[in-house]
Image: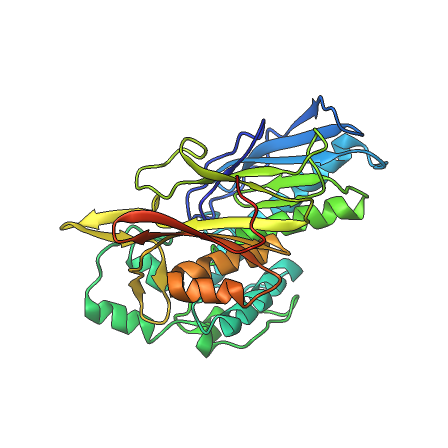
Length: 354
């Protein structure tokens, strides 16, 4: 998913879309932030998922030492890296995709089950077992590009969650051979899922006001000024590679506890013979999506859900995405699309943008 940045004083790290790079939990910095609101806000920052992360929260009423909180966040990110990273060759995911038999931990089992549910709900539009399709187009864990129709057809016939069980048992050996050619790639969900893990931990120790920024964003309560969290939404213009450099608007949280994620096709793509090939692959057809929808920003109760649904919207296109958001009272959405050469925006009634 593509990144935004939080404003003001919320400088955001760039997220390279759909790349779940190895997490580097070292060099965690613990910074005490001055604020005008009640309590004292702390920022835990460091390197994660190929970029920097920032977790800001209000320490009011929290009895856990700040250094212990930083260590706990570090441990969560390390667990995600050693379990789900496709770029850490020793992770459970990498070893499983390499054909090894693994003993999945609870995290691997939980995100697998969640992903299977998303696959069912979206009619196959979000499919974590379609990794080979992203690989052959050069948007997965390989550098391939422009596959032939025959190769697309062959890969499509041999991967996907349609061939897999809805759940796996943590602690029980999992034989990769039983999955056939359906390699797993959790990129469409993992960063949002990681935000939720950190947010759940913070809530468990009494934190009420927070902004968790780990490639995607989860926020709750108010910012250090005692106001709503503000998140900038980038304009989906090809070449807009610096988050915050060119904003379409700024979203206001209105005090909600929620995840907010944007997916788009303006940073991760390539052009061959004058034709643009985007990173959004439709797992049902095996080909990159071609639609007027340029980006989809989704607000959902969790960052994992926002992550998955933003991808879903990009796959199904503008008209279906708008209908989907309108049908879901638990979601808000902001869709930017091309209307006869003009960049046009649609927002659901509860999406607050200035």
